Amino acid sequence: MEYLDELESKSIFIIREAYSRLKNVSLLWSIGKDSTSMLWIARKAFFGSIPFPVMHIDTSYKFGEIYEFRDKYAREWGLELLISRNDEALKGGMSPEVEKLQCCNALKTEALKGTLASRRFQGLILAIRRDEHGIRAKERYFSPRDSDFQWNYQNQPAELWDYYSGEPSREKHFRIHPMLHWTELDIWRYVQRERIPIVSLYFAKKGKRYRSIGCETCCSPVDSQATTVAKIVKELETTKVAERSGRAQDKEDTYTMQKLRSLGYM
Image (tube, rainbow, N blue to C red; front, side, top):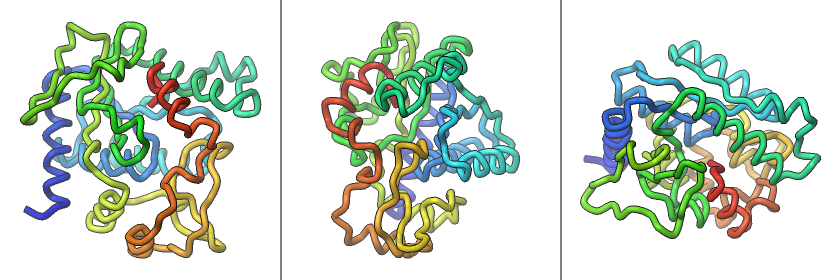
């Protein structure tokens, strides 16, 4: 079995395990390269039709290209798309101009809390990777969150010999991370092999491209000449620039990200 096939096979196994054990689950789709690849794998896992809702957290500050991509492929792939928004916070004037961390918590974490509670989801499937950020490396494939939505990163279940803890009666909900063992380069090689559609923001225009995308107000393009997936793969094979160097840095330091994640941030 080839390397990418092994990665894909393990992710399919974890997605199927999550659906089998927890039943009421949702898949979080940010429209980035990782979650779109995971969505692609989930479609393979269930032979083209995902049997649970796909959730998009809409802060209203995402790039226009993200919304266009989401709506186009949600229709084309027959997804049950669930939009999660904190309308109350938006009406109250919450925005990145108020304070970025406060904004992230209100428009992402609190929006997610509301949707999980109203739909009573037992599991949320996310496409985070260990190599993406130091604090994300502490996650498990099945990471429990307590009734207050908090993550105890100092007391995570052991995962040995592909045994995953996923008992819904003991915890409020689980975060499931089927892409934890992938790297950024793996993702792009997989996108290249599978010809997965990707938002145009990732491709260089006038010497700049986005390497990590989210809200338009918190992302900056990085220097690049990569105008195709093949050129992105080649670029990443030699670059020493951090993947999230283009994200707002006031939430990227280890302590702040750890604090955000312990409170429920993705």
